[in-house]
Image (tube, rainbow, N blue to C red):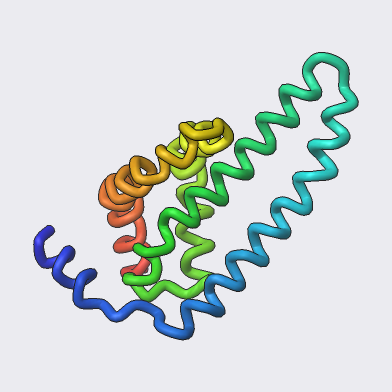
Length: 142
């Protein structure tokens, strides 16, 4: 494990290529949001259950986006391009959404929300170590 930490610390990251990866990720997340908005609006018209379902959909999309953004430093150090990041995030989407859901909900609360960002970043390191690190390593071999 210490060798892996040293390897990540010495990695240079993506450099300027990271900008195109970030732009691709932003485009992908914008597309997801654009698809979710009309669904959320239509759900809002369903009595009683609709507003709850629309809120759940919005929070889930926010959690997916937040999880991917919190993992950006790891993906950058690992040197993963957009397609590799997308595959890793999609393979682990249930774990990532479950991880980021409480943070996404907390970010909606004024004053308290921004205070949770540091906790979310620390928790993202645990997520990488326990969930993504084994998965990305297995994906490189196959």
